[in-house]
Length: 332
Image (tube, rainbow, N blue to C red; front, side):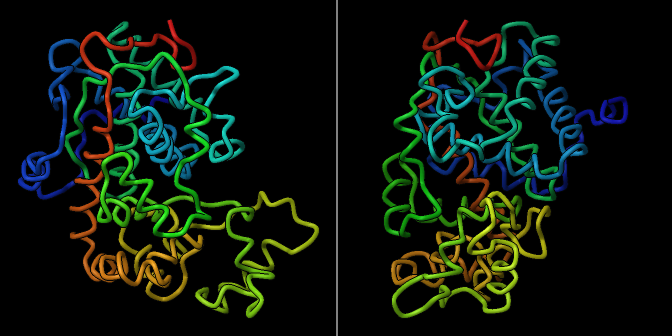
């Protein structure tokens, strides 16, 4: 698309002095660096950003999908592009990804464009990382200098993908799953803020709408007017569970702190979202951060960037480990 080719190196406004601070906060970065492709593929940022912008012009929801792919990649085998692999053990077939993970065709398009600019140089794992950053910034969120130099893994882990943090998990369980990959409670809350963009299927939240417990038909932590609207969208019978609702009510595609304002007003869509503010687990661990982020978008942006850098540094393959896949769906 020619209207997407003029993007160049446009960088959204941000207090750039903070980037240096975020990059020096003790994150274990292995051999990753912000200038990894400075000589071998200096065009990579322009190419990826152009293709992400084109994808978002075709489907605004794709920003959330690409961010989610990066998240689901890093939590399984580390950030190695394993979520992109096809095959009998594909992570795409695990319950958290099946019929919900999307954007693989966009990554294919980006990879082809990057290969055209720099053959066999940039890993699929790094493309995911850059695409996630650009998805956030092009949606109005922060821009940051991504750490690069990951290589692609040779195997998928469908079983591991089955254990990804779930919208049905308790807050304590989610905190434990984050801790298992080196992320803390602040990372739980700030990365949950990624739900400020995107949508979720009825099947992920319909349990809050009917027969919730012996004492309440509807989840008492869900705003009654919102519950009534969701019941109409996701009927107890006759629906297929695939209708979608915005994760961030009234701010669906803008990356901001409105998600946290919703939680304070009991308008979180998923039980794992609202639980950050309203559950017994959340009361002791996450509620104060939700309140802080609802009051300060700049605080949320700062912590989100730091957590994204930490998440992107989970067990990367570097040096001679792994490979640079020519096709993100299969090993070379």
